[in-house]
Image 1 (tube, rainbow, N blue to C red):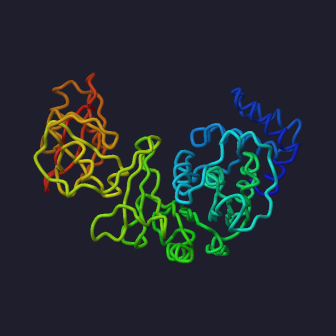
Image 2 (tube, one colour; image 1 turned 45 degrees about the vertical axis):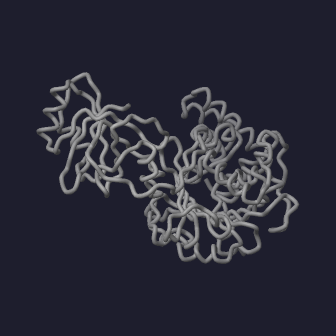
Image 3 (cartoon, helix red, strand yellow; image 1 turned 120 degrees about the vertical axis):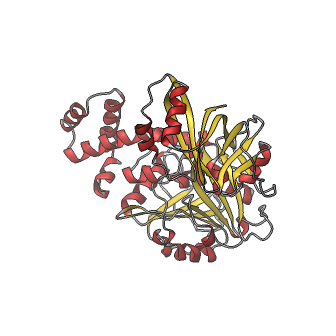
Length: 426
């Protein structure tokens, strides 16, 4: 999809084509039949874009809920966008810092679309101002506007910026948002009350985990932070500890058990956060949708013998170096000082860890594990590992099981010795 074709989709004719495409998609009509039908009324390019948008809206429902039915997407933009619950959490936290009340989401949805006015970047009557740099299709932009901010959003790609602008207007937020196609470096961060920056983590070779390959690259990101009144950064969960800005708070966010991102709160946004003595960066973990928060408040976790239960901490707690806090919750201990598995003699229910009852512990070998599983009539295994170099899929094939029972096999090490634990979920 190019920019001209997308703009054609926003015309009255384009909206009719999209409505027909949505109807065809939702009714389960064969894609070839749907395309043929649309092309009887609309040109091939518009027909193709309308059908693509209809399919993307259907896929987007998981991330954006009811909003997806009114929004516009690119394939890459949808894939890289922030889930609504995560964006809302971040926007609420930023709004709390500024002491502002959010808009009514229902009012925003029912308000008529409006053209984005030219608003000053700071001291806006629409609330504190936020520059959303690298805004993508606008997932965070929407959350920030609904949280009560006046949002100045930019994206380097003109098509993506146009999609973000269309989404603001489609959701009735055009009076709170303005969008421009521009590089993040072209924006003066000091002109806004806060900056939100989500640097692109894709290159021509695909996704990158190297902050130096972000766009803007990490040194440029830190330069923007240094010139900002307050800054919030969205980064990959695996960001190296040593490059985090001194004095910031790093928050790892998990949604339904999956770590989605790390958020770096800089300047006054990270001030006052709980941090361990001697640490330059504060840490916290957040579980969504419950909104539970975990911060440092426990001494170093003890290490001891394997007990009756195994606990696997949520990935956000592991990334935030808060395994000791989870150990305290389950009255447990580490099975190895370098492995994030906990064990306890007690069964404790906590949202911060998955619990497994341990039935057998053995030094790992394929022959020994296969014999133990066959003896118990096991035919299906879920395999987990930490500190193990074993190829899980190859192991699954090599086990050659045929029983009726299901178990969880945990591969790990204690000291230098590999172990296998046969478990069932609590």
